[in-house]
Image (cartoon, rainbow, N blue to C red; front, side, top):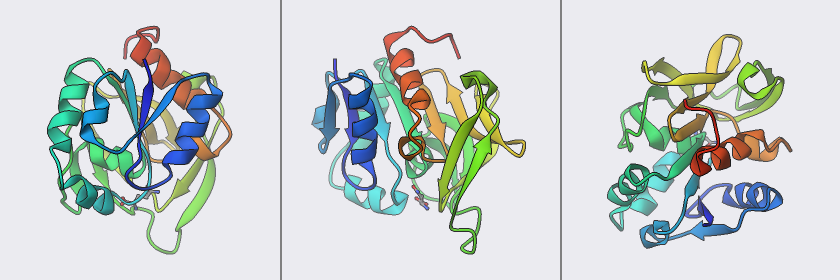
Length: 192
Ligand code: GLN
């Protein structure tokens, strides 16, 4: 079964390249009907408002919730994490598949982008985080496990089959986050 990458907008090509490097067959998902038959899906970074506009033309939210309910694994990075969250600040529609609150563009305009070494004991440290107009998790529900932190703040989290990062693992040359998605969707990752 293939792994999908939502290819409406943003840096989907970089995610597809990582997954292919890991030996996966990859489908660039441009229609909600493409979700049938996938075992995992990446929601890439980009601009969440633009993604929402592009999703307006079809029942994307229903299809993504059904995909999750049917056992599919999800990885959202940056704008993708914003789409997965329960609450977004400033308020905008979201899937609510991850019990977190998230604040968009939370590092301010002056600090547009930066790199930082992350504390990622769950992934055998260290991990490089590339942050681009990044959001911040501002509240984390009781079912959500923190897998990596920057300066004490959660930046990579997991709730069962949902992974979300406020940074961009696809451009740091490190495949561990994607490998975790594959293990989660194959049922070979530890429970989380
Ligand atoms: N600032 C973007 C948003 O709010 C996210 C940035 C990114 O995905 N790199 O959707």
